Image (cartoon, helix red, strand yellow):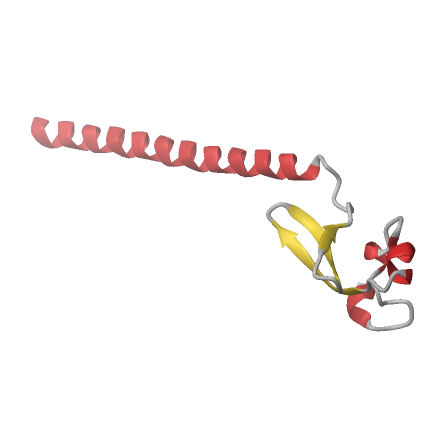
Amino acid sequence: MTAQDGGTDSAPPQSCRTPGWWERHEQGIEIVDWSVSYVPLGFVCETSDGGSYDNGDVPGYVNPAALGLALTAAGCAVGSKYATELRTRKREARQEGRQEGQ
């Protein structure tokens, strides 16, 4: 929130003030922008020399956990579709059996 507010102590964003930040600042390398990366999840700080770095705010276990949850959700969706298809086929087979018996 402080990175977007533009208030006192908002530039550079506090998340970009990693260990060694002040030494780079004294060498003339400024933090000019920041962005959020979604794949993999992370907060990226961009520097005036054209470089960028992930500040490490997103713990290492979050990306594998997000991948695992996404795969689980996809598996549940496929399983749900399969179960619905089986029920529909069974219902149609019963209806055809009744129509032939009448």
